[in-house]
Image (cartoon, rainbow, N blue to C red; front, side, top):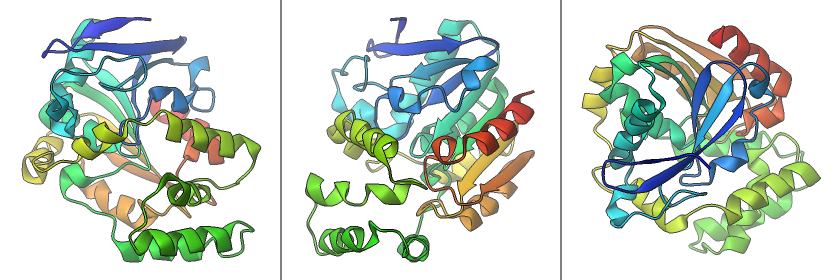
Length: 279
């Protein structure tokens, strides 16, 4: 397993798969093993995926200082990977909470990013939250699903203060267009391979400075492709569309019927748009 050393001495691992120009991939969760990304709907046929296991996840070491799980303190890890790979500029892809890290990195190092792909990316790094009203709007779109009543009962328990894994697991179907054997296994894998302690620290106070990050992104010369899913609870497509103005060159693709795992929900649409964007 290839490794490199972060600036603070933590040994980090990454996974290499595919052929073609490298595409560095940052997982979400937050703080879930990058293995859940798989081959991203077959992108390995044209690109070499470099899947980074963030510190304390997957095959990467646990840092000596747990405070370094905070999102902004992992930006140097991404830069160290770029240097380790010997790349002057990088193509960068991020999913979900990994979007915060990708945006933070691009804001800090706009000259190093050639292309940026955000898949249902979070945007706390630029001061954008996903309000409860948006989540409820998306939840209502799934009312016809067979799993919906059970999920809503679990949601009521969660909002009443229950936070056990059994309750959270009942909400997993909202993350997928289809709830079947494959997606159930995917959700269970993510649950088993998420570092929950690190996830809490990832968004700790001080993790984001939206004003500075926005200023850096305004200097980004590379292109940006952002995906949203029509029925995703967050980000909603209207939120992603509002983010287009943050970048000099950005495109937003809303995928009909898709939820949060867009490359699983509609592999053909996802792959076609990424292939065209990356050239």
